[in-house]
Length: 284
Picture 1 (tube, rainbow, N blue to C red):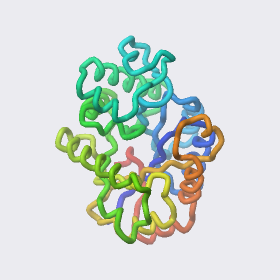
Picture 2 (cartoon, one colour):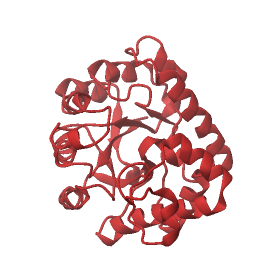
Picture 3 (cartoon, helix red, strand yellow):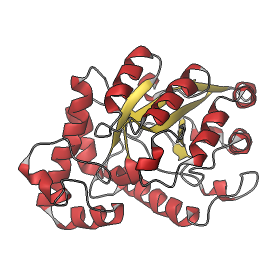
């Protein structure tokens, strides 16, 4: 039986360099899927690219921490500063959404606006995920599930990454990775208990190795991934550096590394030899 693997690029629409890398990694590499940041400067360009690449699965990268909201509803002002920009960090969003019904209503209004914007532009979203994993917060996840149902979107990223990624043969991670993956794994378990309807994969890889996805990562994936974790997703962040200097992101130089990896013939051969079938969420 084939091992099914989705290889997704986050941050589609962030800037021209990211958009170009995503298009090339799909056309010339193993990238099968991407998620659109509807409120970012190059979102319109991303829409044009997505329409030109019908085999690229395109979902929505829900965002509440960067840029300005798309919703015109007054309640969304709860999410912004005096300049109209999102003003809360991910951990602050988690706490405020847990404590306030009005805050959750503001979140729902903005996330709905981001999904609707893409649909109005002619995109049929394959799935939902999010910037900084905000969709995984147990107080926000039910909102995302309700929007998935409302817009007939079949899947939501399941942020469960196995603990084996911290042992050989996997390459080293950064020092914050264990804490990051413990948190996302815990939230994934809670969300699976809350509502498993939209969780179509068994695991997501690349959370611990964010910014470090190279050839050795895929070698480890092929050697270590149990057949029980199929279908699975690999979360990536490919990009060229053009335009990234405007954004507060720790992922700059690493984006070219990940792009080169996704376009590597050696990686493609690893996956083929291991019987891995590359798909996107719309093909599940």
